[in-house]
Amino acid sequence: MDWSQHPIPAMRLETRFGDRVVPAFCDRPATIWAMISQAAERNPDGEALICGDRRMNWRDVASQSARIAAGFQRLGLQPGDRIAVLLGNRTEFVLTMFAAAHAGLVTVLLSTRQQKPEIAYVLTDSGAKLLIHEATLADRLPDARDVPDLKHRMSVDDGSTSQFAALLDHAASATPAEVGEEDTAMILYTSGTTGKPKGAMLAHCNIIHSSMVFVSCLQLTAADRSIAAVPLGHVTGVVANIMTMVRCAGTLIVMPEFKAAEYLKLAARERVTYTVMVPAMYNLCLLQPDFDSTDLSSWRIGGFGGAPMPIATIERLAAKIPGLRLANCYGATETTSPSTMMPGELTAQHIDSVGLPCPGAQIIVVDPDGHELPRGEVGEIWIHGGSVIKGYWNNPKATVESFTAGFWHSGDLGSIDEANFVRVFDRQKDMINRGGLKIYSAEVESVLSGHPDVLESAIIAKPCPVLGERVHAVVVTRGEASVADLRAWCAERLSDYKVPETIDVTTEPLPRNANGKVLKRQLREAWAAAQ
Image: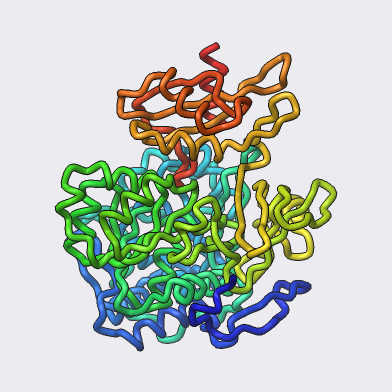
């Protein structure tokens, strides 16, 4: 099975980043700004950007972005300079990304959940010269002496005091800066499990490739309307939402923050067709009392990733919105978002798979010695292709450790079957070894998610002097399920050694990072502290 049923543009092999050879789309924009210009030419009067009461068409978005780019140049910023973006989901975030592309600047994306030491580290490591930040986050900004490279700070708020608004006072830059498609367009810092975060360098060609994959595999057009409900400052928001809508010249509807009740109202009012969210967001929508009465008939593609989608959720969505096709997308910051995607028509038959390799992606499974494993065997997933980044900013050691001949080592354990469907079982560090028996947390979590009272769960290892590790579950319920109920549910569906021996039941949501992934290290630390 491949993507031959979908109209994928022609590809050819090309050299990339010196010594890599990757399949690349033959007909493609050379830069992000070229892709934005094409959208404005193809659909000038089409709605491009909606946020609250503000609505902009593609012509206005392109012209305002060019004016902001001129404002950046007036500050003395040169192509290749880094500008840091500490903004929530708002119009200014999108315009900043587009203006930076016009001016040839590199955007460094910060999360609004980061605290002062993390922000200071990223600003220092990236050498950012300008920081554009939410005015409400001013107290989190590091002192000037701690970030000597940072020459300018600019606040954004919803009132007349926004310093950002002054950037629009300039005449538009006539010609965009010259950049190469292998030049870095964005740096996104990945949350390292140990040590300092690493700055993944996303080149123009990586971002263009990924946005073309989304558009071609999901068959998106200028008529599509996408809600950005995940944080724009992370790879899913910036690539799957913003850049994908640029590629198809569709409409991006920005939600300042996800609230299920508001999401449903917005989706119905704006006739949304496409979205990418984590499974927990779909579950929260289904729990809304007015879900059944909300008209979501225009919604045709529901991308998801970051965690498996519970079968019960898929079945409920299919019953309520028969026209909605769910598409699992698996990837990472280092792969500029998608590496695999599940064709929507196959989701139900392959519920345990994250999909097929995206066009141009080569995925292999290797053993600890770096040898490729046969189909069906479990090992570390390595990924190669046009979306894979060249490496980490200012960190050659981490680049050497994480890449081999252009293959990125994902750290995920998985397998590939004879039909090319990829399965992801666990992070290497999260797999539980109980007396030599390997337990993949995703399998146990999937079983728990089928329980009618369970909202979400996380499986972690707890140390054991006899067996090495034992299975512990943290389960978020609606308040009705007991520990005995949950253990009995698992015992009917899992091998005895996989059944959680201890369970914490809570109604508090699980801790997640800004990408929506559960912070298992935090859960392990909380469990240890409680002993």
